[in-house]
Length: 552
Image (cartoon, rainbow, N blue to C red):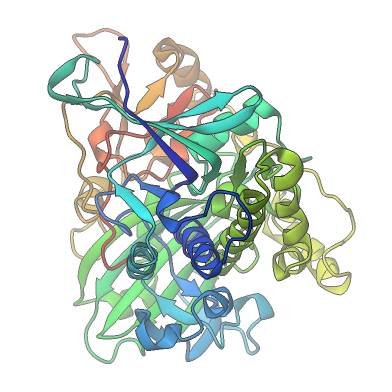
């Protein structure tokens, strides 16, 4: 279908309105608004910064625990405490070892689990607040627009094409068809979050990979209203042990918010061996532990969500610059996998990208030579210091929890080096072992009070997609699903997806066929990451579709 597209020109185009993208936009706007031009060069303007947000509102797709280290925000908005929607400061940091029937609190909380000085926040509300500051600074924010394709000019990035709207599930224009825009920019910043669809294509096309492939985890979370007195605001606990097998890497969190609200979740590394393992079922089982059951009993589930996380760290960070483009935030692997902290690193990466872009725009040169100042700024910031100390952390757990603890003990002593530096990693999906005829486990149903099935949880995510639109989950060869994958791995997409998107359905006595319930998708990208044959491609759906994480 040949489409005539409206073309818009900008100085800077930022794809993604999360913490990284918004802080990049706000810092750049502030630099421009304080700048007094000299000479005949065109005057810079904050109005020539465009930000794309695929959600219905800023914050709608922002899911996080969330514990925020405020130091990057304090640099950007020095008086942030006066207006930022900070729920509560952390008042207690605990580390708990779970067995099936007991919880043992560590007598001394290990440093990675200490959170004094940090805040328990709703990342959805923080980004919505930041979005207001960005718009007040004069930046143009386009909601319900996703970046569908990169635009290249020569060897460089020249912008993006947004997704077409009003296309039916067969790819034909409906009466309300509107073609996507061609947005051209001198610098395009990819701030798409984990496993960004444009970032993935750019890294592959330009061979920007580091020495390790990216490693990922999936975090599954619920927000509850609990009975008064069950949890203190600012109480933060991280759990190790049951029900996560010792052969896997993962653990839980409990964050006390104000007004008798609590965030509970389980994060699992997506490099486990059992293709029939079900992270959502593990999370629901985790909630039946006596410690959690006592906390949640008599309460009410408010919200549900799931999100993937980049675990690979420094050695999995792609090259973050190209001609006309930068990669920031989770798209660039700016997350401390030991502390599970990435908000402040994403913010700081966005701010350093803004400083790089500002100098490039002033000089009139946005080539990779000029934009290569970005990783140099990263090297000189606390981002490098924090990530360098945990550069081998996640790789240490590739053979299970106990070897991981041995490696990390040496890493603590040696400033992150450990016994092997660099420790190499493999893509997580390569860890699957074949099922050899093992029957499929019974699906987790839940009791409807403390534990829930996937569809009930998806309902609480506020997810909404237009039913009559092209499927944004593209499977290159569904025959593999019905034959090779079914026999070798038992179709793990039915288990690793936390939103019941993928089903193998038998029709009229024939072989099972893959059914994709795309309207359930909560945009966690786990399918794109964990599919053993790498034939699932997550692309942006029609703008506005997806979860609504208000309050998360």
